[in-house]
Image 1 (cartoon, rainbow, N blue to C red):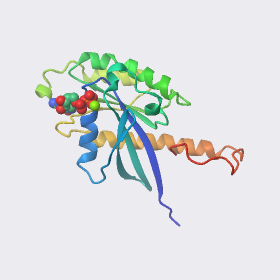
Image 2 (cartoon, rainbow, N blue to C red):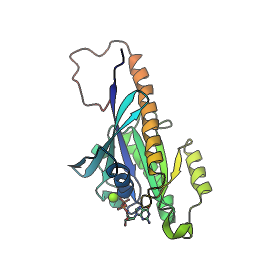
Image 3 (cartoon, helix red, strand yellow):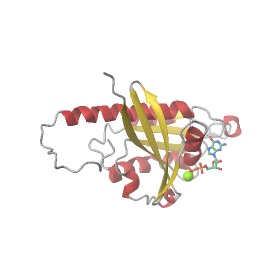
Length: 205
Ligand code: GDP
Ligand code: MG
């Protein structure tokens, strides 16, 4: 018997203000079938459903409401994240330089069980600007940064021209799902310490 399993994955998008986080999300979600927009306290999320292998996956993509300027996103934003998407603008050096801070801030706030294997993805956005002439961060430099953080996948994107946006989010979903499966296996390995009286929910799995 084949049972379709639905999986909810929480994805958060971080990076300096103005790099194109909201535009990337809108490009990805709004041009396709399932779209939903919800206002939440201090942050917004959109959802998108995808089929990956035998799994129906709902990506819940959280966007900031501009508070990234103050780096004060609050614990609810980070809580239970399955994947963290870091975005910088290939034309703005400062947005690349602050990636270290965002990476560190995520690990501090979300506090994942194994920081070294937590799924991150880096997007270098706005590659369309000025035909690439105003670019200040090379692909090589970005890839070196990714390698230094444990081989984070890297995509160059244009939210404006819809370049590589689908591919990037598909990789995001796959990476988050792979990590989720590992957790399933881990939890299955725990003996019946959790009784029926244990409250349900509270966990995004
Ligand atoms: P956020 O603050 O990171 O959410 O950035 P926004 O999505 O609000 O984008 C900031 C500005 O950059 C807006 O004026 C967007 O239209 C513009 N923008 C975003 N992505 C791109 C892109 O890929 N190419 C170009 N040329 N402009 C972009
Ligand atoms: Mg925004």
